[in-house]
Image (cartoon, rainbow, N blue to C red):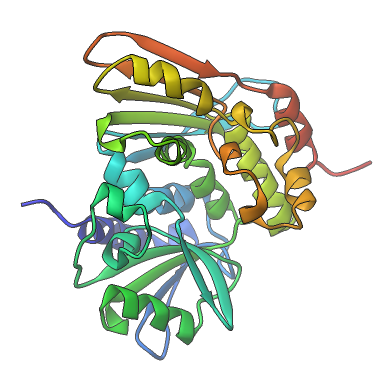
Amino acid sequence: MTTLLNDSAAVLVQQLLAQSGELEIIRSQLDSGVTIIDLGITASGSLAAGISLAEICLAAQGHVTLVPLTSELPTAHAVAVKSDKPLTACMASQYAGWQIATDDFFGMGSGPMRAAAGLEEIFKHIGCTESASHVIGVIETASIPTDTACELITTACQIEPQNLTLLVAPTSSLAGTVQIVARSLETAMHKMHELGFDLHRIQRGTGIAPLCPLGKDDLLSIGLTNDAILYGGEVEIWVRGDDNSLNDIGPKIPSNASEDYGRPFVDIFKQYNNDFYKIAPQLFSPATIRINNVDTGNTFLFGEVNSVVLLESFNSALPSD
């Protein structure tokens, strides 16, 4: 019997809570009974909390680590992710495809609660929905979810409030930054889905992107975290099937296939009045992708790391003279 994504994530949540003091996170409960785990709003959070948050986003179907990075960038580490179940890990759970939007709250929802709700169009293509008795969600937000936001989630997932656990962190927090930079593999897979590729062909995958500096606010942090993947993310996947389709789709996957490519994301964001949905979707993907065809033994590499834009972006977080 296959273990539910929400059940797998719940095990990691319990491990997280057992180290709440060490990880500098705060657990609380709303009057409705919803459990809130704060990893960076009022809590300090930590690098380890960010790694745990990223693995919960993956519903325990992948692993995240910090690895040393030697480069001219003002950072000493990169965030590496690997999964042998990338379809469920990245697309059914980690992808921030659920906008939690009410009159008094907005946040980007990810984690296995998405599979329990099954609201997004992508689930019609990948399947992977589930009925869970206890639901785990991750929200990128700078404020604690309101009662109406929680009700939106519990209604969609068909659960009682006491059976909902939400982990929250703003983009500009340490934990929030780590879990976003851990999305290099996910962005590649989502881009491939948008290009019409059958994601069921992908057997496993890895990704790595430089851990960007913390931004002084969420807007700058959105720019820094996106740039880490767009200009520094390197993804490798193993697929089955024919080579011709890989040769055809490969050049369209990396971020340099977009007309908006070539500037720090914060500049692009401002051009579109800080509206993600006005930016050409082709931009949201890693800098490079290596595709290994396990059926033919052939390997394909597309894209390139852009250290010039990365350096410009990361240096924007340094104190000005």
